[in-house]
Length: 115
Length: 112
Image (cartoon, rainbow over all chains, first blue to last red; front, top):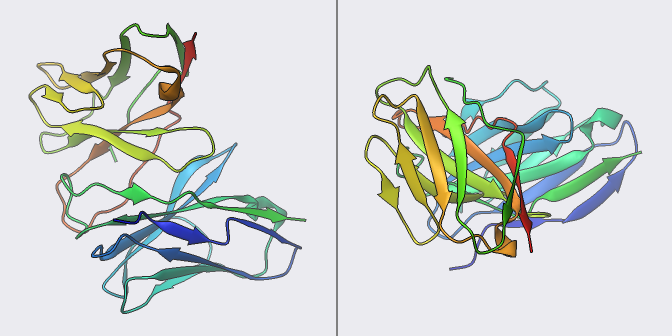
């Protein structure tokens, strides 16, 4: 099976712009989660989608949003970019979202740089 | 979420066993202990998980203390490819709770 894919892998934007990142989960996986990784804050949970509905949400401002399509693919959007949004954005998919046995599989991430 | 405590860094010689400790004194009775690792320039990958009994898989072994307040990830024969940041994470048995709470992890360096 193909793994989790994320596009683009690298992105450079300027402050005030908006950006959309894409994630394709492993075939058959219905849960998609997003994480932000920065040197200062480490890995932080953004939100999770299951069957096109946001099911869990982390502590991020409303500028961060997402959606999931009927084929389980997910997009994440960040509006009005700030310098502090520069980070590695990771997407993870799992089968049903049923811990503990339902493990998450991570993609390689999208490296966003905000200038 | 219950917290875990891990050493910031560890070193080990290649081809020797590595024991990575994790303390989780506030673990609840239904929390599973998960380990993920993140290799350089990659997303995290699942390593192993367990509840009470020790667990083995092709990647590693997980030894869980009898009181469950600590656990140890064991890499039986470290290779250079095992150099990564290792995260110990507690996960409750709540359907739909897909949030993984990562701590700072342990950066493992393998010395050739």
